[in-house]
Length: 182
Ligand code: PRP
Image (cartoon, rainbow, N blue to C red; front, side, top):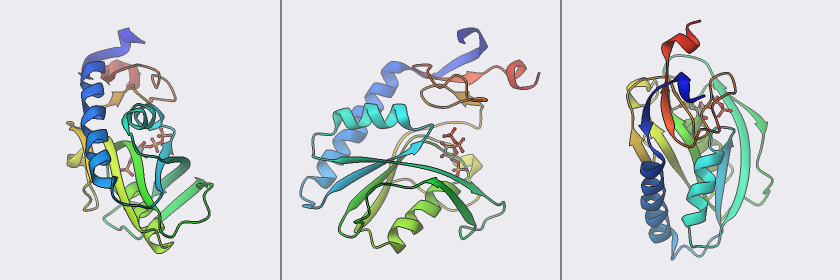
């Protein structure tokens, strides 16, 4: 896999510092909430970030999973989101959710999910992402917690894939053009 990587964009050390920083903010922000805190890991890309982040959160929390895909182009935030797997928790009122992503591109997935949980009566819904590509936004969206703003490059590793490969790289790297332009 290493030979397919043009350049390391976010090293293991940098990822660890990002996780430290975001977990510290979360620990501070939710320490007096008194409500259940539920982290939602958006499959598959955010499994690595979710696990590194949750290790550093010192508050009681629950972990849940979703698998979604959003589609539609343009700037509509009211388009369709496909929910392939929904969270297990059925009691959603009076819960603080943090939806965790590996990367935000157009912003559609997280815009949809915030709307979805807000309409179901969640007390609060915030978002955390390791990587953010604001240059790719088609909807106006800002995460509550973010690790690193990156340029519009094809990145893989630490959960992110190309054709389901490279998710197990421990860092985020730019994929060589020749790999996906073959
Ligand atoms: C990626 C990423 C986000 C979404 C972001 O998932 O993990 O969920 O796309 O894009 P958006 O901001 O344009 O909505 P992907 O669909 O590639 O699935 P995967 O995590 O299973 O690889």
